[in-house]
Length: 162
Length: 268
Image (cartoon, each protein chain N blue to C red):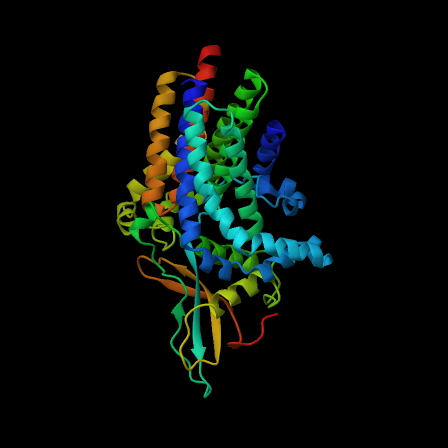
């Protein structure tokens, strides 16, 4: 069984896993790895989820990031926040990747996950709705330059969830 | 390195990684449950959409106290794996198998937000489980070889993927990565801001990843140098990129690779 696992792992390294792509949905435990790590196209930008709140008059708060844009040094040992940062990156990759619809459809699971992240974030006490945007930020640690990938319409706060 | 030593080192390193993972998941359990909303993620499973009964069972198992308990269960299992391995007790295989199942469950629950360190941890625990549960010495060797081969595959694939990348060959990859917020560090970005340093660092990484594992099979001295470089590399990745769990799972698999290469030295 381990030999088959290894052979499938080898096959999955070819052409970025395209050989086994039809089988990827069956790999619920993510047992088949893709070991390319930051190659051939290294991830040199950050996907940043920002949001702002709207009150009844339609006035908006400034945009603010959902997670800290810069990782602390202690993350070398203790980095619990990486799961949610990776969730944002994974969702961004699906919503803006080659297979994504134009514009991204708001019923995609990845879009709904981003919306849920924002709904669960701290909000202004007068907020009746919120709005989010997904940014691609280059040179975060030098001279940040942001490009908007997705923006949502106003999402009512406290509305029943689908 | 003997098989016993490789198993002990791999178990100890993988156990520390599992403990850190458990602590991170437990500390973030409320945030994770809210972010990885199960009522959204369950729509990814066609089987659950068709059967309300199965959906109910899945929800109870994956989105409630049972899931929180599964996070905490890693702690006794990881500690028991080390204790039983030290004692040479084959029950260590069951604890390793338990950790494999917990990792698979975690992937099935979260679907997103996981990375190669989680996959390598699953591979290491699966290999260790197979080692202890194997019916013969030959099968035990095959189990360790599986983990060592996955380590070599990871390095060679990553090295080749970088070698065909213009950004890596041209030395632009590391300055770009280190200037990002998620995987960067100010001091590292400054260091690789000097083009000769960046170019040299990119090519050293390409060479060590692509050529290190095959060359390590040729001679014990090369294996020793490669082992030191790989350990330093993963320490550097943790420090500069915040990928803390890669250190534990990849060094655990490195122990099995060292055993595998040592066997080859006796043959070649």
